[in-house]
Length: 135
Image 1 (cartoon, rainbow, N blue to C red):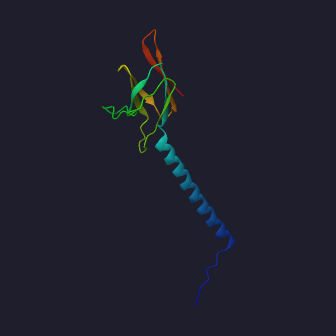
Image 2 (cartoon, one colour):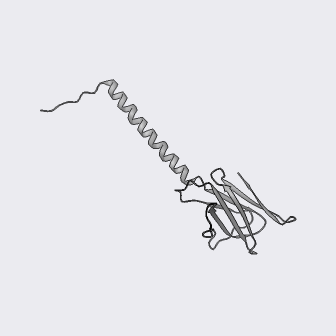
Image 3 (cartoon, rainbow, N blue to C red):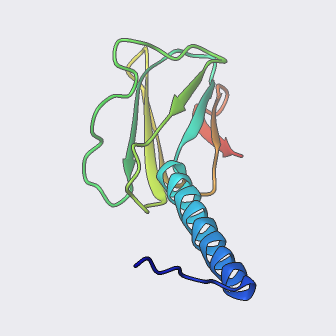
């Protein structure tokens, strides 16, 4: 004997709404996770007039700089380095260090990479100082 399950129109509509809500929640969670994984990603723009040989970016809470992001490459005047993070961190405050081709260095502390998508570095020759702006 086969039994038939009868679902009235109201129950069917309620089940569809529930499935739609669950799907929407899952989609939003996936988008939020993707955004959190890349929230620290940024572009580093060299407007110093000099070649940058090494770039280091580390969480402000860390005691070491980690690996040079440039590897065997260099960042010439006007060039942009896209810095990508693997995700999994909610940290926002980062330190950035650049090393020029003459071995001089500049460090920028506590840059909030959760609110920044571009860091542009400038050098003031007359003052002998390096500064940065964010967007």
